[in-house]
Amino acid sequence: MKNTPALSDADINEIDMLLAAVPEPYETVDAVILDGYLAGVLVQPVVLTPEQWLPPIFGTEGMPEPGIPGWTQAQHDKLISLMTRRKDEILRGILEDGWFDPIIPMIEDDDGKVLEGKDAMEALGYWAAGFEWALANFPQLEDAALPGVPDLLDSIWRHLPDQDETQQAMTKALNEEHPLDSLDEGIEALVFDIVDLAQIGIEQRHKVETVVRDQPKVGRNDPCPCGSGRKYKQCHGAN
Image (tube, rainbow, N blue to C red; front, side):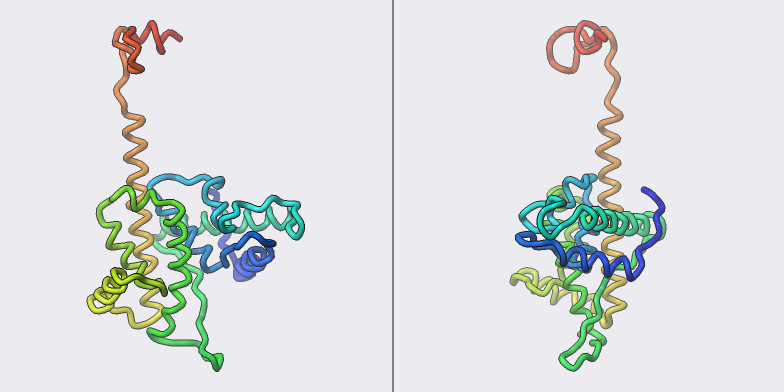
């Protein structure tokens, strides 16, 4: 992971503009939802390649081909570069500092006044929606049934605007047991949840890699593990 400079406000605005410039029929997310989505990619117990995590950003149509009407190679390359830098920036923050600054919008009322207190936490819903989109496309984290994951996810899902009855009950219980009274408190809790999920996911990756790498060595005269019935030296160990 390259130690590239953190994205500036101008970089984040450019991400937003480039995402908005992607022509139909592609339905891209915005920079806030993208940020939550990238975090959802990073907490997985498997490493996702760009070929896997990039297409869902552009909706259900897959990635647009650079050169189609309204979408140039330069726009394409710049957007991919900025999104990759942001993904690396989030991961670096998690690994080195146990913290990253999520992209959270300031919500205003009808009179243009910035909301405060609990009302301001509506902004976290957009970020959480991006995180949910990642898990909808990559269910590996939930499928792994790792200890601690369901509670951490419920803590994030509490911010989603659209919830079923079960989630509404869970959100109500969380709000009573662990109330969040301001946007700052909400952001802090959200980031810590993501950091904890990332640590669980990364630990699981290492366990899988260790199992694969630590398989016992096969002796030359042992049966070949492929199941052929021949000795290893006469089968896959012949070379």
